Structures are given as C-alpha cells and as structure tokens.
Image 1 (cartoon, rainbow, N blue to C red):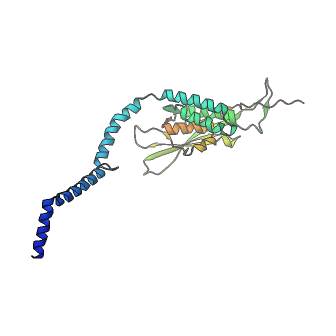
Image 2 (spheres, helix red, strand yellow):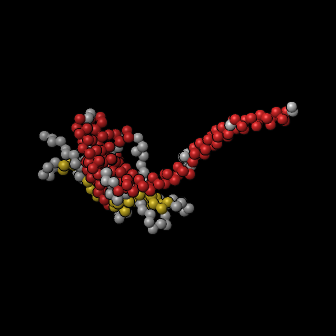
Image 3 (cartoon, rainbow, N blue to C red):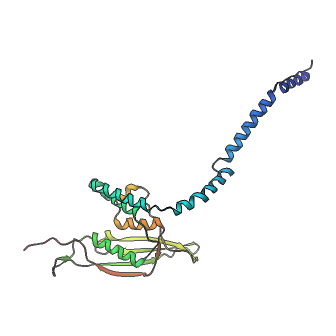
Length: 247
C-alpha cells in the first residue's frame, strides 16, 4: 500500500468517525468567539451601538433629574460635621461646602465681580499701618482699591482672544488677584469665560480663600463673564475694628 493510499484511508476514517466535524466545529466556535470579542471591545461596532443607545436614553433622564434635594442634604451634613470638626479642618470643609453646594450664576458682570472682591477685601485686608478714625466709633481709614481689564495682544493667527481681570489693593498686596479670561475670536456665540483653575487636589481647598473658591466655582460652571466696565476704583472700610486704647 502506498503512502498516498494510507493518507486517503486515514482521512476517510476520520471523516466517517466525526473527528473532522468535531475539529471544524471547535475552530468555528473559536472564530465566532473572537469575532464577538472584537465586536464588544472598546472600539467594536456593537459596543459603539450600545453606547449610542444608552447615551440617547440615559442622558435626557440625568439632565431632567432634580438633584437639588441632595445638595440640601449635603449642605446639612457638612454643617453638622463643621460643628464637630477640629479647627485644622474647618477651612477645608468650609471651602468644600461652598464649592460643592453653591449654585453658580449663568453670567456675572465685571462690576459685580469687583463688588464681590471688595467685600472680600473688607473682611480680610491687613490693618497694620492704617490710620484710625475716632469720629463716633473708632474705625480704620478707607483703603483705596482698583479694577482693570487688560486685553492681551496675543497672536494674529490664534483663534482665541484672552484678557486679564486685575483687582489691586495697594495697601495689602495679599488681596490682589489677576483672573485670566478667554473667548473664541470672530464668533457671535462665543462668550468670555474664566480659564479653569487647578483645584485638582481636594487638599488644596484647605489653602484657598473665599474669593478663590468663588472664582473656581465660576470657572468650573462655565459662567459667562460680561465686561460691562473696563476699569473702576473705590474705597473699602476694613471690617476689623481697632482695639480700644486708653491714654
């Protein structure tokens, strides 16, 4: 018997006893599994289709859901925690409470931002070196403050326009702020927005002040900045009162 005949006999035997069908079936099963695996991978066609259907169904539900009741509960919980926390963590929790339970306005004018900053200066400005006014009740003298919008020259080829909101208190440089804003050029729908500040680590909330928390809230919420005034000035009376002196 020749080798060719032997091979034919073996093949015939395997065909007759079902071995070939079994092997083909196993390979076919592997093929189907691989194909399904590819379809359901991150960039597979079926995965994309499922994601599209889920997005179209879930997104409107989430957008329509009223989360305000949970913000109220969060506010209550944080208030209770603040009553019992250590002094070291009060700043962190206070800022967390303001940042995550406050609702940012859809738009704010630069004049309103200036007023907001002056309130911050009033509460926090350094009083060392200030004269005391003894009329009626002793108070510190007024502190002059200024506001200005500086438009950046930028590059002619850039599609973005940028500017800086500058809040200055000559008496106390710790009160000074420079806030970067930007918008798209040549676009009727483009609005000024604060560039996103980096509150990437929640621990940093321990070290930022109330005005910075407010600015971050505006940046994170995409609040529109309306430039109604390019510059302004004013005077702020420090909230802190002079200690009584007796001569």
